[in-house]
Image: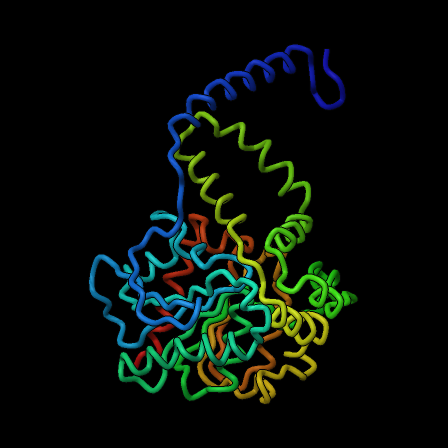
Length: 356
């Protein structure tokens, strides 16, 4: 006899036995699993300013692209989500297609970085990396790929220095911070960020992570760990799971002053739309972004809703504007099997078409 959910005593007993078997196998699996790490591709430090380091990725063959591609990631997570492991690496796939790929590693801010401002991150660190590549390659301009918050930084830099960026790619980048479906923005809009930063100084990484997890509490606090039981007898799947968990919780603290400015100018002021983003003493106008732009967004993104990214179309000054809509979420756009096939190919082909 079963109830309305088709649950019978026999089925419950069967599930209980299966659960016990998975847990038993899991004990053996966990004994075999080594410490996992991320960052699959060999890289070489080429420039440094304080804690910020510029790396060049080294592929299996020499790059054929004449213009380097610089990746600018967000501050809130480590940048190697784009190179998580050998079979889930946007970087590896770009290298395989001949791109010359570099990445900025912002490091881990400490109390000595409490008063770093957005000007430091955008003009000093991002700008310093761009200038190093321009000098090293003998070029007037380089290609720039900005991801999430790093995409917002890249838009600012490209608007302030359009002559130094040849092609701009933005990926899951928020532009309109006040779309109705932006939960993170709704949370921060009434936040007393001055009291917050004046009290805490730097913003603890654990607090930031907790906020992100509570955007999808059932999925991120319960469902994924229940689902872990299903893979406990598969060592490789367990290692993949642990690698992702390690990346999620290996987050830097946020430099207090830069955090204050970003919340006020972007999340609260919606400065790309309304104006008022000031980096140093210069105001950012996206109409100055006159180089070709490829805007990539994820259709199921809960952190940067598609509408928040699509707003870029009407704001940039270029006539060469393209969009790529990816069927997936904010993390899946880096690590899913579909992403490995679609995203690097789209980026490479788009750049190749503008390489003359």
